[in-house]
Length: 149
Image (cartoon, rainbow, N blue to C red; front, side, top):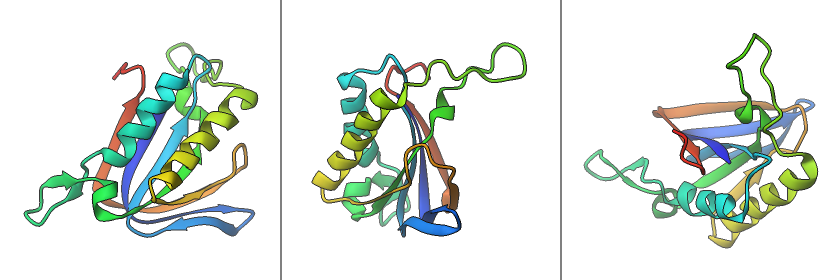
């Protein structure tokens, strides 16, 4: 499972020019689910993302988590995070999980954020979405549940 974590001042996602998800301060999370992902990969992300200390404390140091600041999260499914562009010029997406596997994992991630009392907004799995954000910092972190980077 791969994720791009972006600390944002605000973010929204539109489908057909209509906002379907919108947050203020928090995290915009682009989440890619791999065909080989298991429950342990999902649990890694569920634990890691809201506890990442990427928000500044009173001294300007990144010591606070999303939970600490009571921020929001906007979760966007993005299979293209699993692209393999090492060969040729056209990326291969064969590592991405098919919808019948990816959707339940995506939904469980969202449910877990809500259970942690995090205001959680989403896009729509598989939809053509327009994502807009004001990156704060900028702070952008790449995560991989298999820790390949």
